[in-house]
Structures are given as C-alpha cells and as structure tokens.
Image 1: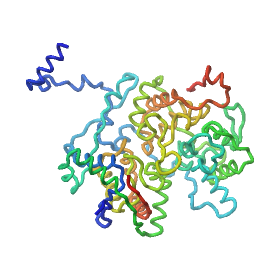
Image 2 (image 1 turned 180 degrees about the vertical axis):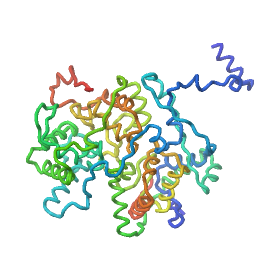
Image 3 (image 1 turned 135 degrees about the vertical axis):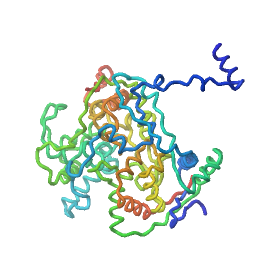
Image 4 (image 1 turned 135 degrees about the horizontal axis):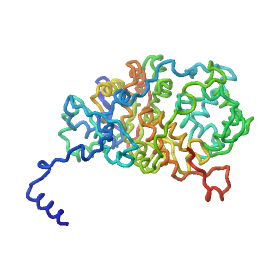
Length: 304
Length: 200
C-alpha cells in the first residue's frame, strides 16, 4: 500500500525511476528464453537456427497426379475413393459420427509425407496391429478409422465405400515398392526429453493453435456452408478416445511434422508433447470398445 | 468507386472483406518500420531448465506492412477512422468479374490452389483461404475477386520482408516456398474465379 502511494505520487509529480534503474534484460528473461516469436518470422532463418532438414526433391515417394486417374470403371472407383477421402462428410455421411474428413489428418488428399500418407500405408498391409493384437487387412484398417477417428459406424468389408477408398489408396501407391517401409510413412519420429506438462500445453495451444482450431478446441465452422473450415480437436464433433490421434504420442508426432499448417518441423518435441497432453485432457466421445462403466471409472490412458 | 479496386493498377478490392482484417491492415500500415539492420538473436530453448515460464515471456510482433502509397495515408487516420472505414467497406456488396487466362496457367494454378505441393510440404491455398478462396475470418483474407497483380505483389512483399503481419507467420512460411511461376498461376486462377459477396 505504501509503495502504491509512493508510485502514485511519483506519477503525479511526473518523476520516473525507469531511466535511473533500468531492468537488466538478463535478470528478467531467462537465458533459455527463445526470441523466436519476437523477430519478424522468417522460415529460412528459423530452419537454419533449428537445423530443420530441408525437403529435397526425390526424398519422398511422389504419387501420381490427379489428372492421371484413368477413365475407366476402375478410375471411377478411384475418383469416388478420393471424393470420400477429401469430403467424407458428404460421400460417406452415413458412416461418420462427427465433423471430420479423412483429409483432416491424412493431409493433402493423403499425399503428404509424415501425415500418414496412403502411398506408404497401402503396400504394408496386411500387417500386425498391436491395437487389435491381430493381423489386419487394409480394408479392416479403414474400418477402424471410421469406428474411432470418425467416431462412427464401420462400413462392411464389401461396401462401396471401403472398395473405393482401397482403390484410391492402391492408385496413390502406383509405383511404390511393395511391403517396404518408405520414408515419410506414418508420423514423425519423436524424442521425449522430459514428462509433458499440460500447463505449458495450454499456453502453447492458446498461442499457436487457438486462432484456427478455436479457443475451446471446437474448430471453426463455415458461415456460408455446412461443415468445418478448421477441424475440431475435442468435443462431440471430434475423434473419440479410441482413435490413434487421441494417444498423446501419435498426436505429438503428427503435430511436430505438420502443425501449424505450412510450418511443420518448427516446434520442438517437447512443445508437441505438451500441446497434445493438453488436448488429450479435454472432453471427447468415449472409446466405443468399452462399456459406460469402464469409460467413466477407468477411462483409457493417453499412452506414451 | 465502391471499394471494388482497380484491376489494371493492382489496387485491391475492399468491398465485402472482413472488417477485422481491414482494420488490422490499416493499423499495420500506419506502424513505423523497425530500424534497419537490427537483428535479435534467437536463443535455443532448454525446457528441462525452464518448464513453466517461457510462454509468459513470449511477445509477438504486432505486425508490419509497408506500402509507398497507403502507409502515409494510414498514418493520418485515427483508430476510430480505421474502425469506421473497416465497417463501411465490409458492408459493401461485391460481384467479381472473372478475368480470362491461359488454360494451362489456370490448370496449374488450380493444382496449387486445391492441392498445394505435398512433396514439399506446401499446403494448398484452400486449406486456409476457404474452398472457393472467399476468405475465412479476420486472419485469412479472400483471394477470389482480387486483382492478380495485387496477389503477386503481396507475395513478393512477404518474400522481400516488406510485409510481416500474418497470423503465426503462416503466409510468410508459404510465400518463402513459392516460385515466380507459382505466384502467377495461383493469382491468375483466383482472378478467374467468380464470387458474389452480399456484404454484411
């Protein structure tokens, strides 16, 4: 109170100690403070500082061009598969229980390396899956996407939707080596320097994710049409707790390579862990594998 | 004029743009440029030592946009002027007149606009500027219905450091990866789109 009065008096008399006792920057800011956000953002500079590997032509498999889809019955199935993939809300509406499209995570029509590209996934199936403890075919894997990531109902194995998506994945893999792990498959590799904290995650989320995905994580809807411009990260229109993106590690691996959109590889491992821990703590649809009792009293863990 | 811009001179249209976007641009145009040659060194983070406080200390650049014509004008506007101008231009209706372009240019522009370059990690225009290039919110302005020259000029400014007021530096990261042909193709594609904005 006394200090406040003194400050007020100083303010009134127009005297300021600011010039006399300047705060040393080294005292206020930790040496670990990163001035990245302070400088005019320059990607090349940022990349040089963080030693981000440049993507060189020929480093990743390049799938065929959309214009090269053949004009045949097979080509029509591929086109349908692509339509389902980029506009699931319209072309596979009956199987989808939330507001997402396949291409919300499999970025750029399932072509982008380290965003679970289809051209790297398709040639690897059938494969053993730890989640189901069984060997699954590609079709069965796509069914799981509908069940968990789309929080919906799995189309049957003989449904036109599964057939079309499988055709699209096969067409994208044209020329890819069979049963060989390609660079860019799945998500980025990720270290874990320390245990993640949602406290940091919340701050980072509000700083760099919230302007698109919303302060409440519910995404942003179009004003002039149906659907989401930016997909929801939690809430009723997001993926459920059984989805791969709901495990903290998968989310962090995805985010590191792809988020913020167009600025992949600019956050470090720990930032990705922190943000995804914060996202994982939020409310989202239950895991459909468990009954209500276990979902409430023993909810699934974030994994690690 | 009713805020529709001038095609040949590359002056952008303002009619029907998001009010928040117009206001921010005016504020950024009015801002003084930083001193030349001042470099703030970036220091690597060590989270094991500072787990809690780094975000509190993060300060964002308010955003700078330089233009030889508009900057002196914007400096004479008060905050209220900017607010009122933004609301006025946002309320104007607008109908775009598609500009013809070479078929191959449009095709390449469309490929960039709808799909980007996945092999380089370059996102598509539509992933932020909305499916028809009509823009989304105050951060993502419309591309459709803008003069092609204007769009190319702005990308050039990002590449040259004369404009740095985008959300999270997203457009800066994209502009860094665009070739000259990419700019022309994408701009021609969006100048070719039809668009009807009713105003607000």
